[in-house]
Length: 128
Image (cartoon, rainbow, N blue to C red; front, side):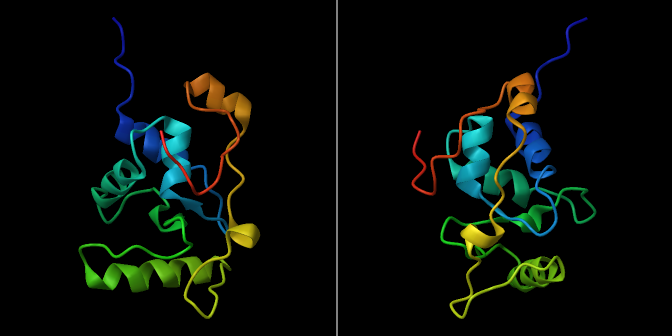
């Protein structure tokens, strides 16, 4: 019996689980890796997580290094607290410095095995 391929949401969550503590990735970076149609798809996948999910959702931020507002007004503060607890610093403008805290990405061999993009992340000006 053939197993269906994982959904795009499952693929997104698998990659987000790889982001180590003390590092952040952008929605666009995750979308690039899983060949999603847009960074917004990553946001939808993370927004649908239950409260007890084993996915480090807080490590995904917007391309400017900021925390994107969510439906719950308290979640932005929680995300900032969780990131700060991992040692991630915020500048005076409230943004994270990708040069200092950005995730370099997953192992290219693992990405290729999963059918994901193993090409280097082109940067925050993501477009498919």
